[in-house]
Length: 415
Image (cartoon, rainbow, N blue to C red):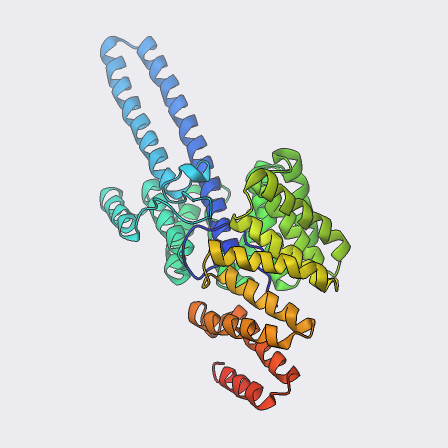
């Protein structure tokens, strides 16, 4: 059985909602830092300009004014370009504008971003901040649309250049470390991602402090990676610290706080602590439904699905079934039959019916999950592998061992 702790969406692709929202969060984070740097630079240049005009003779003042104005214009231009790489609130950003169902609206095309990068390269060369911003924008665009292989060399080049030009502890360098680490995590290269995410967290603690929003984001990202690696004990203190800090600094209804609630609940479930996980998931679901997102938002549907999974894990099949059915019905309507999260709900409900002994009800669901999983995700995707195993186990339970063996043999040829 598969459980996605998805938190919204930003593109119609084969990547999960959890991955999409992580990309959006990194985009937001980088813009906020870029905007702050540019505001500070402009204010400093304004002050220098005023001093020059007051202190110098008219001719010298005009020369100084022209120089400072040119610098201020460049800084302002950099700030505007950085908006392509990062963002203010998600809904106002041209790359990451989302609808109430979590889909992209008004995003630039890949071709437009490639043309922007080529233009900046020709104008400024390879190492200019505007070029790196455009390159990072294109990389995260490709990542958001599922082209991780295309995104990786771009994000690697941005990181390498920022290390050389800005140093290892500059906030833009740390963002690039985070971006590459998150992408490698998404590609399943956990051992390569872990040292990058550890580096980002350690540097942010030192430079920004433990309570800074970027530091907390690094805690959360490293904690979820450790959970994926199976290091549950290593993940727990990070996810607890992230949740506690977000409650204190952002409040209980902020989207990041709700994401931390879901992440910690998933960890506690993996540790077998159903009693600890259930109140967290209920809190998250109620907050999203009643006060934040509404009943049909992908994040709300993820919480509904996860509560069903938690109740099933605790042996409460009667309690789990209505949540699973609601999640599946709404995901079909909101996301469509072929969305990865919908396939998860199809498989989850099928496995619950199998556990209840309703083999006739389970079989069409498990077949649907496998067939669409192969088409949408590919034969080797971990979820498709899970769907395959689930159907094989059901057929064996039903006494159809030859059919189960045929499916197993076909799967084994895929490696």
